[in-house]
Length: 188
Image 1 (cartoon, helix red, strand yellow):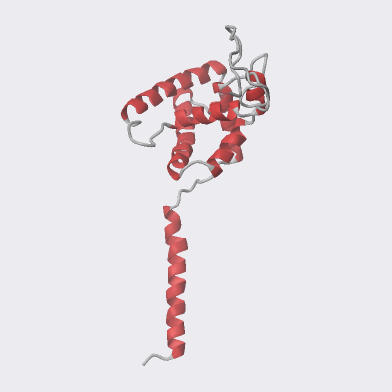
Image 2 (cartoon, rainbow, N blue to C red):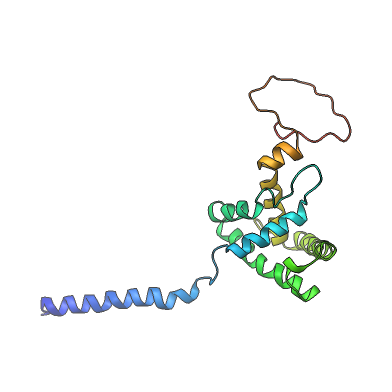
């Protein structure tokens, strides 16, 4: 028959072992990187600015703080699979810049950024034709572009400067003339 003290000792040793194994051994299974850093936000601002640059009429993606928008979307809205694609994409993105131009993306001039983006756009198109048929499969460059466009056109700058804006509780007009070159409506 086991005494109470022996039972408590064995339970304590067992529980301690389980806790040790779950924190010590299992930590190696976790991704070493599961958050977007402040440096990543700067990189995302620059990626966004290359996708939607500043013009003389309105600010670009950097002015809309697209990097912070992507960080919030990453933290709050992306699925586990999309988070993995996003984080792996940041690493692959920088690696592509270093491989092609032997420097970081932030140090590239606008012509080099454009050349890199055209190459990544082709890679994303090929990926879409081959792997994109798998449900939920998305290339990291397409994810960056989608988030940039969504974030920009839902920002104040995108909705009021890049597009025409009218507050929703306005009067209904069933037919509005469109003149070639007019900006699209932000609300519809």
